[in-house]
Length: 119
Length: 136
Image (cartoon, rainbow over all chains, first blue to last red; front, side, top):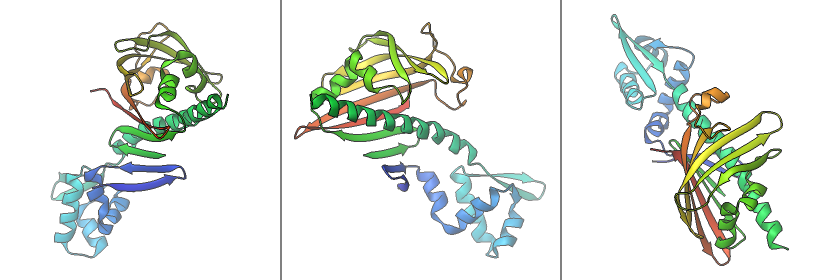
């Protein structure tokens, strides 16, 4: 599975991250991620907020957990859920930065090739 | 132009209005490399560069604001007009590898990456593909 995220006029970033794709493919899961991005929350609280069955929420949390996006830590009788997007952001930071540098570089290469071919 | 990010890799494809020989030469002739490789406002020079399979380089991008940024690397494969594979390693002025953190880079910036460039000519135009990923 592939995610296309168009971010620039000159092209697109295509993320092939099956796990993340699964994580964000479902609107409820996107809402859970958004909710957890404000801070850790226990499973009971999430279930309450969404007003859908405990079973359905637990299933979404399980998928998010398997995708590595959400960690679930038992704390007493509670299950504390926490989003873990930071690490993924960091990874793509250098990729995005590097891509920017190489794109600029290739613009210059194109210009260089055009300039030398006309002589 | 197409840009892709696959997990932890950079992929860029671009087609140039020039023969594969010319595009390859822009990568392998140090005089030509110096004319396009540096980011805008920076200059680029070499202490050493031998573009052939097994050859090595020691290069420097000079930024008037941030100073010098040295790199070393080894050409693992140089196939005329077809393919270039080299390692790209953050280094110091003496050619010793350095931890990217020491020069103020993000801790997640990999100190060593592998760059693969391929050239494919069709009807006088050349499709160039670049991958940059962790050197496993």
